[in-house]
Image (tube, rainbow over all chains, first blue to last red):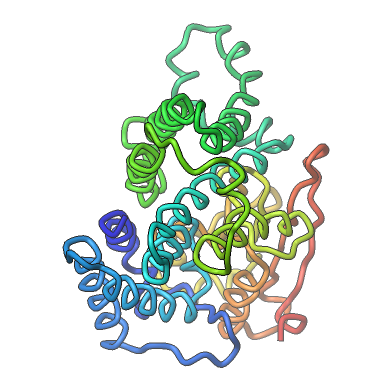
Amino acid sequence: MAAALAAGVLLASRLFLATRAFPRVPVLDGWPQLQPPLDAIALGALFAALCGVAFAPRPRWWATAATVLALVLALEDQSRWQPWFYQYVAMIGALAVARDSGDTLAWRVVLVGLYLWSGIQKLNVTFMARVFPWLVEPVAAVLPAGTREILLPGWVVAPMTEIAVALGLLVPRLRNAAVVAAIATHVVIFGLLGPLAHGTNAVIWPWNVAMAVLVALLFWNARGPSALDAIVPRRIGAHAAMLALFVALPVLSFAGRWDSYLSGELYSGNIKVGALSITDRVAARLPDVVRRHVVSDRVGSNMLVFMNGR
Amino acid sequence: MSELSVPSFPEDRVFRAAARDMCRLADNPGDVVLVVFGRPGILTGQREISRNDCAALR
């Protein structure tokens, strides 16, 4: 997990540094922002703490340091709250505070919540009509003509598999089957988004690999805990916190009260899209790194699109 | 967001901050307009669209 977080941060290192065109958006107004070289020093310290989490025989203090550093970076820019970053930091935070075997239970709940909400959020017409056809495009392109019409109605398999995996992971007898289905799902996702197909959003490639490994390590042949023990916390602690963050609070996303990326909405189609319409004069003043992303819309206006709605 | 190698965080707060940053390059409030397409309807796919220029973003 520490290696997966390090890989994600490395692949998106500009996201975590001050020297970039896209502005940092502090979570709290007026929150102080790290300037160079402090930004690079904080990032280096996070990597060092993650090495401690990975290799130290007793990683609790390293996990505490990594969590604090990650929270500092997260508080100074909301764009850093990517789903993978949020998950890893929460799990490393659970490692820092959990007692006995509470960290394992907390981690299991995180995975159950992620699969559950990732599936639920995809049950919408935009996923069916836009995101799923785009996802399977590389496969559809090599299939014989006419097969595409058979493939596209299969969109519902994606969300239902994720929901079934979440529920299966809760039930001891179904866990191994759920693990197999989860790993198969990650293989398919990696195949579609990875370098052999779309080749997009490289930062989630290691996330897919990490999720496949985590689900196997945490659930394969695991006889306990029961579904009831997993969803009912016995005391306030890491397990209860993960239940709140990954299972309960995402329901608020439907009322716009909980952020999309904290609610399993990546590649669900169920997210907001933002764009800037700018005049030629403003476009001419943009730095090159930004100007090359300006496109013309149907009526010839300059548009800078933040999100493509997937 | 290809500059940052991640998808943009899809919330108004982030969109508005980026738009306000862009407004520094504008001579007139209407030179930059933030267009937000809201979350699509689950069954319809329809999105509410809001438009705010630099004056409205202050």
